[in-house]
Length: 150
Image (cartoon, rainbow, N blue to C red):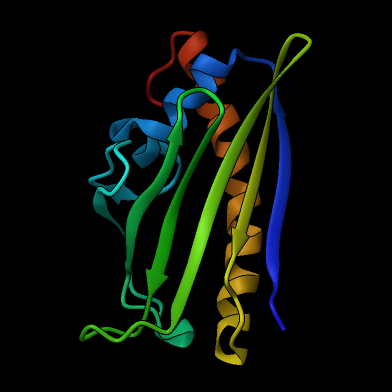
């Protein structure tokens, strides 16, 4: 039974501004994790954080950019496991942006939680993604208000 995370968030900011936070490595690190991301189709990259043994997670998400449509859509694979090259989660993250009056709607779809062993990670990521979308908003607001230490 496939489970999918879906979130939508409105930003009172331009698509260009929101896009930067989804595609610039240094800005992604502010709201997500350390990474070596580049918005180039086929580019392999990693997100790195602390290991979470209870989730069989070694702290590294192994990713590959699958699609880039500037200011509209970006997607990448999102794989993880307990370590030593073992992958227990093989999923895909898709971000879509739509212009709205006075801002941008951001849509997240994270799919591929088909195994029973992925349900704990699904629950953790579902909450995490929502918190991270709020972090993007906080970072953008802080940057626009001249506070770079938010």
